[in-house]
Image (cartoon, rainbow, N blue to C red; front, side, top):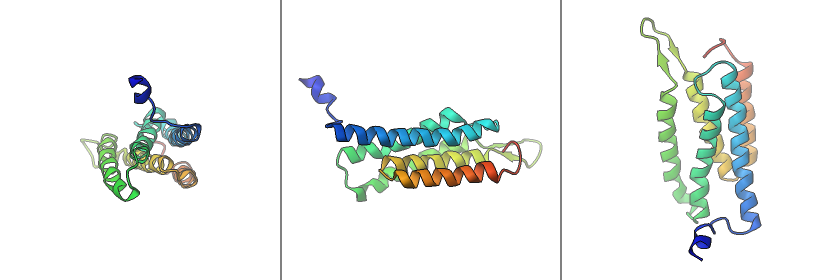
Length: 148
């Protein structure tokens, strides 16, 4: 009985389907952006972007499942935004002997991937897809150099 209660957070088939769709959308969109970054040799690639997007979706899915009012979700979003900034900072490298900075585009893509995951997690899948398409256009079509 206790074990059944501990695993009862998914509820009915509708709740399970909603959760799976939102998580899959986050994973796929993060994967698309991560694949593009990996294809140019960026430090954060496929798996990183997938995990960032899924994690961001999960950070909003859990409070929504628990019944947190949408107005109170702003604190969760602030935490995700600040946390992802630290992850993005790890992708930025300054070359010691010159004023060349690498990884800003990858850091920005990790940041945007978190936002896309949040959109998917909140049930805004169309917005997440449109944002990912715009990001892909920016990353793939507007590329300046082979390694950013």
